[in-house]
Length: 527
Image (tube, rainbow, N blue to C red):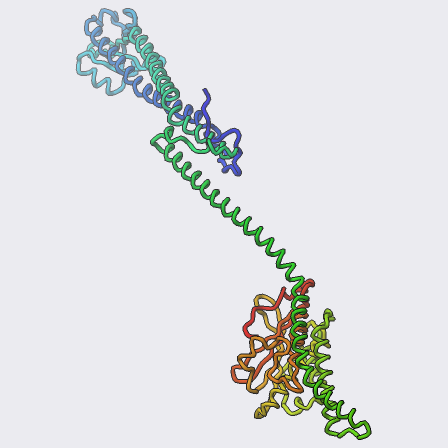
């Protein structure tokens, strides 16, 4: 039976670890690794035991042979057997050989010579002709011819055959023990405690890959209490935490989809509202204009009606100069109301080109050079020559004319000391977008706090008289918004009013494509 390995055949890991060039075990599955390891271990143990026991057994055999040789040698009449010969060799029985001669003839060591010279037969380890040590016994007779050394070689062939059989039995016993251990491991231990837990983990991982939620967790009943069991429990906890996170993520995604759907519907409604916002705002403003214009026209019309009635009653009399001037002022008042109404209601896209800001300011001041209030104040221009902005030059000059004239009239009417209007410009970055800022500030009394929230609406003015119509700032605000900018009115910290015109540094028209200047005005405070 082939057991499972640590990797499933159906699973290809994303990146396999690098293997050493000669890592033989690294290419094997777990069962083969275990078989190789306990085979090598058992074979090594058997070899160790064999090479330790065998020399001891052979030593015992040689000792027995030597002792037996010494006994036999002590019972023999050696001179009679040798026949007086100086040296020689004679077999005197099965496995018994008698050799005699000098110590050099017999190849005896000095230790053996010293032992034999004591006079009694003694075991002497002497190699045979093949270099194998056999059991021998020696005897020294000093009066014998040739030096008197005798060696009796005794070879117990039966004992040696029994030892050989013992070696075989020992080897077979070790092999039997190995097979018993291997069988016990492969049948009783490893399948239950190693292979089955690994197989369960592989099946559970395969279930995860196939999306089988029922089989991805390992049954706690089959978890051992060892390291593999700890791995299984840790894996179950990881899978449970993963599924919990997936459920929370699914709920979050469902909620996001619902919110996205709501946002999509709201964006659709906002888009439709944005498309109609300009027309709806203009219609609302025109409604306000319709209500306000009737009030504004009534007074000059009443004055003009009275003067016309007087002229009609006295057709032959010349018109007094004072009455003529009054009629002219009334007519100019009506003209300004009509022009402001047309400017506010006119709908046309700006013709955008890159224009120098200093050129726009000088052009506006040139148009105002004959305006009496402007001539009575000091205008300070602090505009960098290299600063430019994409805009409709004519319409932006109209904005600057309105703002400078309003500031001059406010200063003259309030009889400010050293009336001064300061015009500054700069480029700046807000919310990651580039802008060009043009500020018209005065040193007058400032804007009443109650007018600030609605100052840019039509007919909101602090001078509802023969000169003020309340349309100039509304027209200016509409022109700036058409350029994708914003007009901000505020009171200066040191006193006086300030109007800031913010234009995108790159062409960006409402309803059109951006030229890189951002999608709209930055968040600002003030009105």
